[in-house]
Image 1 (cartoon, rainbow, N blue to C red):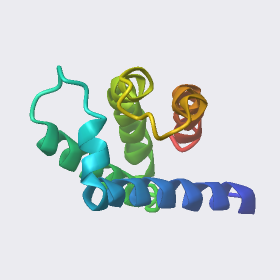
Image 2: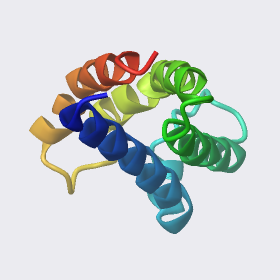
Image 3: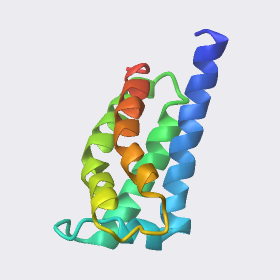
Length: 118
């Protein structure tokens, strides 16, 4: 693995671990982001946070990297409806609307980035 690839891997891992931790530090934000049709909001926020932490750490180990990358891909697809809800719900008026909408195509870039490690 080249130096650039290694930096990308460590950065991706750090992003997912940090995002997962934020599910517990700023739980209110994530609860607010849950679409109403999803049951068990608190459990889902905690589960997705733990998944991000575990999958981010899994990227660091060669033995689990491929599984972690596929897990991240599945997780990104699973949380996409929440990102759509964030952009369309009107609950996040303190954040610039453009930023809320830019999160959606960002998900596709994150999918591609995770795919590099499959």
